[in-house]
Structures are given as C-alpha cells and as structure tokens.
Image 1 (cartoon, helix red, strand yellow):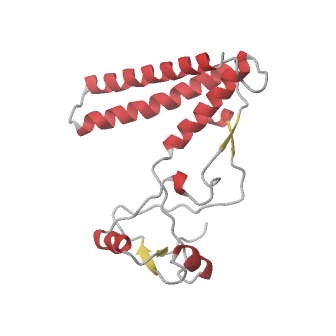
Image 2 (cartoon, rainbow, N blue to C red):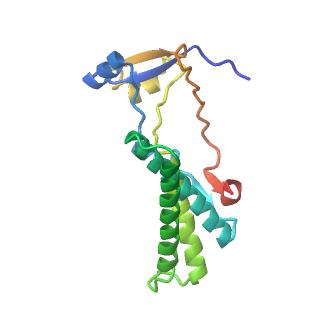
Image 3 (cartoon, one colour):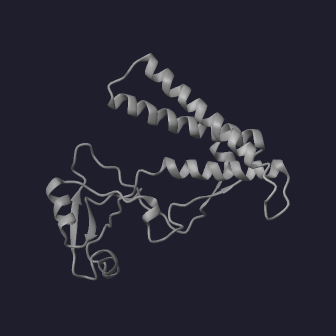
Amino acid sequence: MNKQPSMFYRYRTFSVTTLDSLCCDTLYFAPIGTFNDPLDCNPTIECDSNAEELRNLLTFLIQQRISTEVRESLEKARIRGEWATAHANKSAQIEATNELASIAYHATAPDYEIEVSEAEAERWLIVQAIERELKRHYERGVCCFSTTYSSPLLWSHYGDQHKGICIGYSLERNPRPQPQKVVYGESRSIKISILI
C-alpha cells in the first residue's frame, strides 16, 4: 500500500472567489456535468439482466433517492419520528411506481426509428432510467487535488496559464479527509448484474 502524502494541492485562478474560499476555509465541489471531459464520471450501463430484475433495481434506486430527499426535507422542517419515515417511504414507493408506469406507457410508442418489440423498448427505457438514477446518486460534486505543486501542465490548465496560485492543504483536519486516487483508463461500463 502506498503511503498517502501529507499535503495535497489545488491550482487556482487568483480571484475574489479563491480568496473567499481561503478565508472561509471552504472548497467548491464541481458537479460532474461541468467537467471539461464529458466522459469523465459518466458510466455506460451494460444490460445483462431480465426485465423483472431491471424493474426491481430501478425501483430500489428511486425509492432510496426519494426516501432520503423527503426525510432530509422533513428533518429541515424539524418533522421527525415514525410518521416522517412512513411518509418518506410512501412518497418513494409512489414515485417508483409512477416512473415504471411511465416507462411501460412510453414503451408502446409507435414512432421508434427502428422496429423493436414493446418488451425491448421497455428494457431500453429502464436501463436509461437506471443510468439517470446512478448519475443523480453522484450529484454531490467532485473536488480534485494534486500531489505536486510543480506540474507545468496543471499550472497551465488550472492555474490560470501560470498566473494563478497553488494552495496546499494538509490532511490534519477534523474529521480527517479520505481522498481517493483517480484511476483513468479503465472501462466505464457497469454491468447491471453487479448492481443487483
């Protein structure tokens, strides 16, 4: 196991936003959709499951997301307890049922460019919905760092063409950050079967 560096670095433009983040000790987590590489953090789903397994997975993903969102909203309003949990679960169930009904309805559309059966169209629409749910799950954003402060390429791309600044961050914080190394070059494909 490689030893983790004691410092991480961010190349930034020297601006009011950068100064504000330094003064307030905050970081910006960029939404995945704003990355300059449209394929970065954008998985491709391989369908290797039957329609029932796909429906069950989509139901689970939707219910998990909606239940969490509703509980967080109720918590902000200081509504807690069994009623709040039951309401969140019921809302999640309704949302999942409505999404599956919408997919089943759209699978019967007669205007597909290629001829597909209703079952094939439904599977394709469910896989697309699963991709959307997975992306929503990771909508929290990403904050990238480097282990070096002397990379000409990073200075060029992220340090305002060598006119910006490079900020060093220590891991000695509470709670201690758990940075993850980015690994490029592997397949972006995810088989449905590993998600079930």
